[in-house]
Image (cartoon, rainbow, N blue to C red; front, side, top):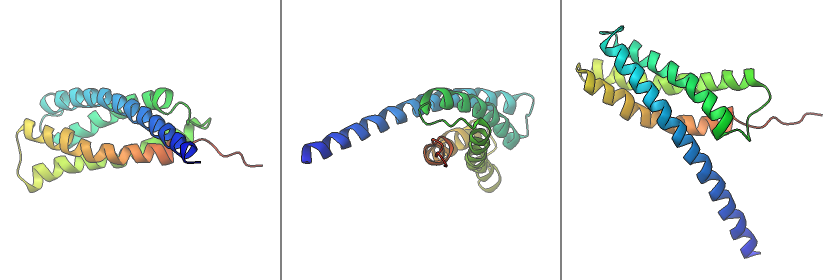
Length: 151
């Protein structure tokens, strides 16, 4: 009985570890996409509109992330209802993006940070940490979940 329990526990940890590693890989790639777009927007087309630049970077990274998470990280859990899944994904990412943009706003408007490097750190380091923790649990428990058969 104890060895059976141990086997189940190690199997669950192994599954969770693989899932977290895939989520982290997708997140790292999305971070690069987000960072490049944010930096480009903040120092180019949206110069002076730093919060908007953060939002544009987040939107582009979100679309990349949905495809990668749906077809790789959580492929065993995705539902056949793509619309529901995408809407939930977008809602959870809007909250995560709000967390990141909020960090930029706090840095800029409450702390007086004005240089692009400081704002970048606020949005893509501090904000990303808190947004990522929220996103993992949201994806795991609300977005990518198998549909229940209703009879």
